Image 1 (cartoon, protein in one colour):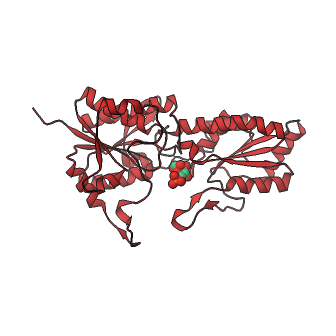
Image 2 (cartoon, protein in one colour):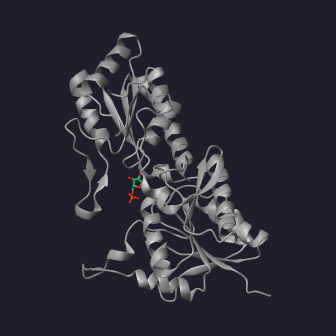
Image 3 (tube, rainbow, N blue to C red):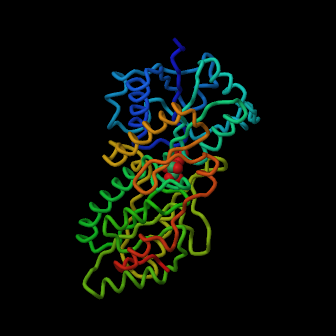
Amino acid sequence: MADKKRIGILTSGGDCAGLNAVIRAVTRCAINVYDWEVWGICKATHGLMSRPPQAIKLDVAKVDPLLTIGGTFLGTTNKGDPFAFPMTDGSLCDRSQEIIEGYDKLGLDALIGIGGDGSLAILRKLAQQGGINLVGIPKTIDNDVGITERSIGFDTAVNIATEAIDRLHFTAASHSRVMIVEVMGRDAGHIALNAGIAGGADIILIPEIPYKLEKVCEHIKKRQAQGQDYSIAVVSEAVCTESGDLVQQGHFADCRLGGIGQYLSEKITTMSGAETRVTVLGHTQRGGISSPLDRILASAFGVAAVELIAQEKYDHMVTWQERSVKAVPIAEAIKNYRAVDPQDTLVKTAKGLGICLGD
Ligand code: F6P
């Protein structure tokens, strides 16, 4: 009898809700359907770089309680490109070969990498260099991985942001204030657009649509004139100042997007006289129990990834397209960044609802 197939799974990049549900789905399918061995690799490629490689043998009993739990129980990292790995002495070192050797030391036949576009690009480069049989699963609250309509974690993030907006309506109305909600999403406005529509925002600003402060203030004043003396504005973290500068926090390499909400608050108060308050949702959007939709997507992606390995169809990523899971070459899947198209149905929906997009 042939040896059991042995597969590895890792989570890479920023965490999000639904990652554990993917690990569970992969483990259940690989063991229940194919009787393979599944190894969970700790802290993304760092686990393969360690000696001995850091990995946990997974079984159904271990993964079953993970379905709803946020984060990734395997750990992850969004730092340390293995091709230019930051060493303690400040130098950068190519440690890719150590990762490939780690994969070989674990005796893996294939690897499932759950990541965003950046992580998948790195994993693919490693796979090509070291003959790793890689299958990708897209995850990111930003929902910006090309080709797939949905990535793991996005729906939960939208739910969290929507719930926050729902809550802010009451306090905004009570105090006749403009509440500014800054959401994540990196360079893409998907979270702001979706949560803004779902939460009944009055203003939605996204990086893909240039705005004018004057238009935003006009909208606030128009609402006031109609007796609606409060407004909710949702803004993506990568929206620039009116003069085109990104607002960031931190220093040097550790710079993070953040602060556009505060900028808008000051400008809106000065220009319209409205009282404003800012809520920055930050990492709450990545935490918590995963939504049913994310769990369903995670389950479908996990099973489909195992099926790809069974078919030895490597170097592919699973995607969600037109209500079904499809496999696309990873290179093609990550080639195009998926920002909000200004002609998108949801942009038209927002405009049709009379939401101000600042343009
Ligand atoms: O890519 C996911 C994301 O949450 C972005 O929306 C955000 O800009 C970034 O990661 C935050 O990264 P970190 O966890 O390093 O602060």
